Length: 198
Image (cartoon, one colour):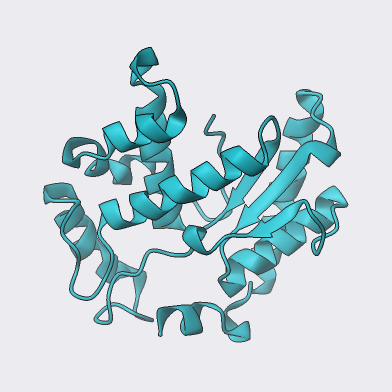
């Protein structure tokens, strides 16, 4: 049900969202130029949900990247966190209950939904795929609020683990612990916010 809801065409961006995506694309283009990163080394990885697919399309257009080409990749593991059937299609105000639960125990699943660790596990797979397919490239990840803040939580912690682990996958596995995962709300984002991770 969640994937069906998220991929329905009526959940694409509203006009304000298109404007925000265009602005994010322009800011990203400026970052690329400032760092002398050529457009042909840029890859856009995005969630299959309608609003993120639409966002990726808008950004690709701003960057003059062919959306159906090799530089854009839909990734199922970047999908929105599923909060459970009791929260599906309801107001975001309801999510505070789950975030309170996350702070106490990020391994506990809301009824029928995904825990923080469930999302971290699939994001670790997404990172491994990106790392193997797009090594040495600039990657723009287009996903959802909770998913992105969990991604930033595990990547920041993984980078702080030091050199005791030789690869990123091992570092991520080492930091997938309740004390780290319970902190994901510290990385909350604004709509269409562009944020560097690594």
